Image (cartoon, rainbow, N blue to C red; front, side):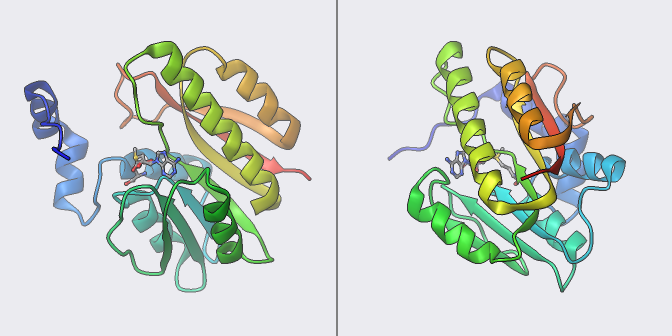
Amino acid sequence: MSKKKPSKEWLHKQNTDQYVKQARESHYRSRAIYKLQEIDQRDKLIKPNYCVVDLGSAPGSWSQYASERVGAKGRVVAVDILPMEAVDRVLFTLGDFTDEAVEKTLMEQIGEKKADLVISDMAPNLTGIRVTDQARSIGLAEIVYDFCQQALKPGGNLLIKLFEGAGTSEYRQLLKEGFGKVMTRKPGASRDKSREFYILALSYRL
Ligand SMILES: C[S@@+](CC[C@H](N)C(=O)[O-])C[C@H]1O[C@@H](n2cnc3c(N)ncnc32)[C@H](O)[C@@H]1O
């Protein structure tokens, strides 16, 4: 299968973007690190010894960051449909998160004590048809919420990427049923023009 060539516009943006430069100069694999870092610094999301589940983890900058933050006694469980180069102390599963067998593997890796935090930077494959893409994004987010109901310990938290559009306010409402507090975050590294934003849902209650 031939790989799609990046557009000139995309390459230009990549080469001039301060966060891309910063990521290249550090050991992080993607500029996405700065989105998680900013939210973490503000909301104190990731703590030593935590069990963190990283959904849609490739190429791996969130997993790198989470693994550093949880330390040697913490755990990071990660999954992606794309391969990911190994990250220290990260248990990676290659597969589609929505497959039952993949979910079962993740639950085994998380273990009985359950997870303190689920982070999802997943975005479905885009078709270019906005209504379809939005519906898929919300569909995936609903599966993430179902997963949280099994995987999170009481008091656990969720950080999830969404795209502004149909279904987002209903999704917020849904999260309010299961979490004590639901907030919106748009970190500096998230491009202004992008409809992307993050929802932070705190204090999962059974
Ligand atoms: C924006 S990237 C994540 C970047 C990552 N946070 C980082 O810091 O390197 C989104 C990822 O979600 C993955 N993804 C999308 N749908 C998925 C699914 N159903 N199951 C697993 N991974 C999925 C994609 O393959 C892609 O690698």
